[in-house]
Image 1 (spheres, rainbow, N blue to C red):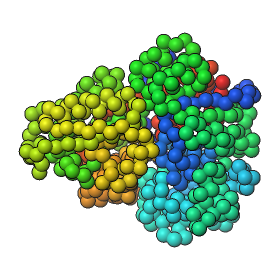
Image 2 (tube, helix red, strand yellow; image 1 turned 90 degrees about the vertical axis):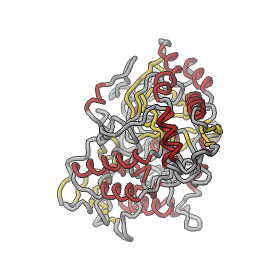
Image 3 (spheres, helix red, strand yellow; image 1 turned 60 degrees about the horizontal axis):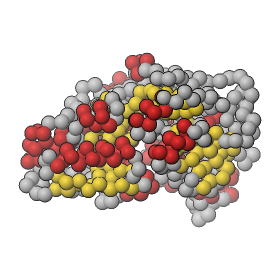
Image 4 (cartoon, rainbow, N blue to C red; image 1 turned 30 degrees about the vertical axis):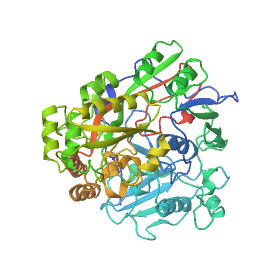
Length: 532
């Protein structure tokens, strides 16, 4: 075996020169820990559906999980690269054929229960993920035969024997949050792997344990005194995530200093208002997020490629990005511009009324009166405005739009089946693990179907074959070549309106220190690194 010394460098150098507009949070290493019992208050845009690391998948769920659990590898925070670095892992080796990974664990990790973390917990965690078939389990689906993941020799060595090379394996382990196997085995009912127990409890080793949780209004986190990284220096000791869906309320809480940090999904004009407040910092960074409207390829009339191309061609990207997104850059296909491997040769769709009419005339629905559904998060001004623009644009080619305002839980439930998924669903899709596989295989391989990222329900043999070959490639050059080909194939099939490569904006009180933008979803809201 050889020591693995190099990972696919994720962020392009050009992306790293973009800096915040009114100041940048800096990590703190000295001083004293937070002494007040008053919690650090983060305003989130939606409720938390699950705190189970094998189930949670959207942003607020991942924020909760990241703060209560630890993964084997953590995205690097110091230079914006997101490269996976050891967390619970101490070191690792990979075989020359790319199929055997041996991971050495730290020996000083204690769970919130008091149980010591061992290799058995890692084996159990992955087994649980694959058994429940929820959340991010698709990342490892089909990779292991029975018994292929095992503790070897002692309590700190885990051996992963893959049945094929898997390019983003180490990157994927940023999403494997290790659970306390002893605690869950004691609380298992009807072979549910502790699923019922984790609906209202945690089984992590992270910096915080679960405090009180009101499903409709807030979730509280309290410091775990025995956290292995320690509490010397400045750290938030108590934190609260408030669920505020109304933009006006979120703005008021921050401006009045009743909140410390507010989420990134407010209307762009809100951050312009925040910049005028001397007590606030607004930080802006290029993001690894695509703003898009995936089109359901298995539901009429968007099951027809020419209808999809007509919609993508009539859409007014210039107005969307200049007037609604306040100067955002049009997305170049499914992979964010800042992610290494983003194809620079893709033919981007642009507004062309006559061409849109030509596409529609070539579709199997030519001459018919067409209606499509557009679903978005009610209360989100940007999503509402984009829906209004879509409605105006499609009227030019005779397609009517039925606009559906829904809650986020309603949307995530609707996209579990193609027949209940809208023709167009408004989404912001952030990088889930530090590899371009996240925005390709993670959205357009059939194994990813059933969650909001795959609302297009694309199922194409050529795309599937190319993505599987890309994952199985050992060399970086071959990976990039195949992932590039996959992007070409996907874009030609037009499964989405790729609107914007967004700018990440977040606002917080000027006395908040330690915030660093980490483009991997949820990881920038790691309370442990914050102080006041």
